[in-house]
Image 1 (cartoon, rainbow, N blue to C red):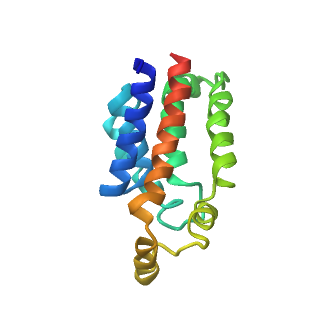
Image 2 (image 1 turned 60 degrees about the horizontal axis):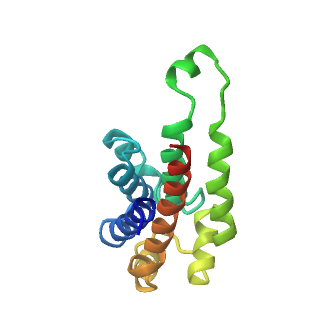
Length: 165
């Protein structure tokens, strides 16, 4: 197995395991990419935590795993603070972010967390309601369903990032 394949598999494996054991899908993806490719940093991993579960566990926003992958890509090709401050417009990040977005939507039908739930579970869950959260867990949320999403996003983002390097 070549080094690229090993890195892709390791990114998948780490994100999958973190989601199964620890949770916070955006942190799981970003931590896996930080550890395998050196992308991002611990402060960014901390900052992204509130975006889990479709933003603050609301399920109304973008899937947190997808957000983690987009942040990783942006940390490589996103506009720097210096360029932002001066109004520079180099925005090549969107070309690469869209690749991840399109792949995610092709696989899961939508970038929205609750719609991904419907694809994975046949229904969506209110993660802020303790009984609904228990049903979510009972349906295998952190056994294989959400871990596979985090793993896939980490792998797909790693492919894009490796192509950039």
